[in-house]
Image 1: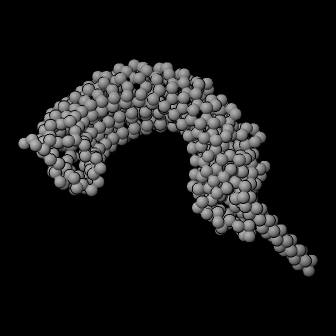
Image 2: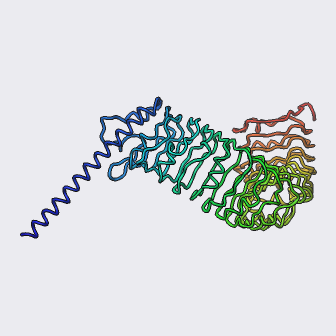
Length: 509
């Protein structure tokens, strides 16, 4: 009897506890409704697409509201109003007071910064405010959501007009990714603070801002930093020689489109074993040699070194030994002599090769026949000559884009280029080609060719009507040649043709 009484008391206690939890959950759900309605009232001044039309204070359960996702206990866990067209002044405390809210997506609206602080109960781990109208500096210590939301892992405030943040962003050890790209940040102290206090960050993106001055620190304290993008800024001075070597975890580094100066060979890549992407283009790093330590970057897949002022010969052996290389750009430099055959050692993986705007002579060496994965090849604006279009290029079966304008290539246009059945763009303009236009460019059904550029050569004869079989052609440029006759009707009726350039005197026979 006594045991039965104890069991009944225990069951009664469990039932009471269940009721208390249920009441508490209902109360918290009611609080979520109040906070969401406060957000709608105080943050949203215009809802042109009526996405919040079913947000009403008569409902006690917001889980069916547009953009709202709830956890199993009925609490709001995610709010996604991305690209909803909302206009207003954002007051974050209304939303961060919902203690179950973990993910907040408000990107692609027209919010300005009303109050970007957060309540002490903030439990957010993801916050996306990108592509809005924020134009004020980010609030500092004690006034920012960075201070109160101590579980934040992912923050995206890109594509706004934020000018800075008073020298620092007080983020904590929970933050893994911070994207402030495409703003108007000019405060270099903010970058310095972020690099020296990055804690557990694995992504830091300050690209396309107005950051100036020198890089005064390296990412040496960033033990987990994987992606660092500082491109499209006004950073100047020398890149610290150990900038790459000081971050063993770095996989993606983009310093392109800045005002850096110094010598390329002074950079230390001896500890770049994890680096897969390196972009330094559009800086001033003139040199006659590459840093030998670049050979340590054995995992490199993307290497962009255009517009640096590099001279002398292309280091074929060094670059050819990068066996994972997919994209290589050395354009707009002052490389001379011939294209080194050793560079073709990277052909196993190479997909894009840009050697344009240099002073290269000769042709494309025969070892490049092994570039079976190559789909984009740009050799324009050099001093190239010879028969390599016929002997090498025409055997690259997966080539889609081939540019070789402004060179010294003579002879007839090789019909063998039709073997490149995947070719979409063929640019042979401004060379010394003679003879007639080959009729068989689109002999195979379903030709991919979209652009054929043959301007400024010495081509003669008539325009072959077979070009009318190139059903995907959009642009034809035959200007500045010695062609005669009229444009065949088969070409005029091509379904996608938008540009036909080059007058032909029809009175010639």
